[in-house]
Length: 436
Ligand code: AMP
Ligand code: GLY
Image (tube, rainbow, N blue to C red; front, side):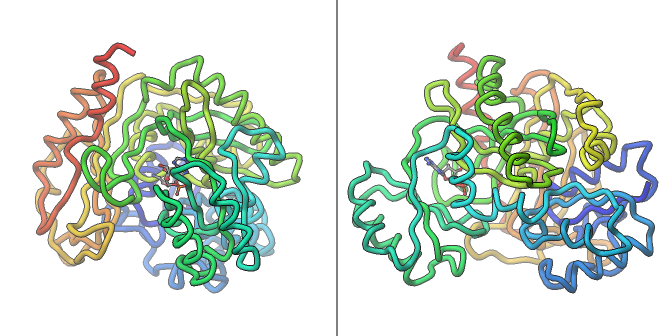
């Protein structure tokens, strides 16, 4: 079958790499794509306005022209904007299989307030919180002052991963809260603000594929969000990932399944939400108990670049089963090997950075997987074209060896003002050697 994948990041390159291996995949198209997915990119970029109705129209027409039978939505923006609903309603694409929830389902990611209410309603463990709007500024400040420190402030809407601020003092919390609500610090996204209790623990990314009735767990991963080594400096989209994660052992994952995943799927069904796609659950392990920090309606980036290489099953078979609500009939095979992913970025990221730097070392043979994110082909050269540029993944029986392979490959790649973290996975190696 012909397959269309939406997106242009490292996550999409990893998905494209795996989809293309399936005997069920005749032709794969990726839009907007990047230099890594170039062989699959559509001749016209179908996403010209950041996923608005005109883009959806172009996508629908392309699906008809190219006889696409399966659409896989990578990022959150098209989901929150309703691409799945659009394709279901558009007469000539209504039968096309779509992996990615409807707009109502994507609210789990698109509105933190919706997600909190959903978790409260279905008894899913999460931090205590309250939501405030501009007209409740004073009530919000009063509430803030009664909470213990640090305190977490979250813009309700999508804010490109920047909408969460952890405030160590009441002064900072009050100032930030006022900036978010009154001065729209994150634009429309912070017209509502969730004030949330701070959870102390270790984070884990859990990935679920659901057809709305049943589900399959994909490998879990650990993300490295901060730009600096030892988890310092500002948050980024993610600087590396490791899968599996040693503390996510059987007893812990059993709690995740019964206390979080199953009530989530049940809640979506109760709310009559048609959810066929990925649920990415960001959770905190607080003394052995899982708490949800956030839901995402998509896979993680760069976690996908670590998770997907561990998947031995045919991804297209899983995606089709998801869209056809037959996930209970399939099984997911995972290699026990460890995947170590390091993200290489443009100097300056997550602040301002330059684009258009030629990348060297890409054409040499490698034992590792090289997934492109912000890259662009120009003539015979590949140029940097974003903050996160490449993600390098290696698989090995031991994390230490997987990391060594990845860093060997990282050292072969170069561009002006390159940056990457050298400590990805070190915390897990220490955890393992402490024998916990
Ligand atoms: P998010 O944008 O929701 O992924 O949040 C960004 C980061 O903020 C998370 O990865 C956590 O590290 C942190 N965070 C969010 N909520 C909490 C919380 N309630 N307690 C502690 N840390 C949090
Ligand atoms: N790596 C975190 C995310 O994809 O949101």
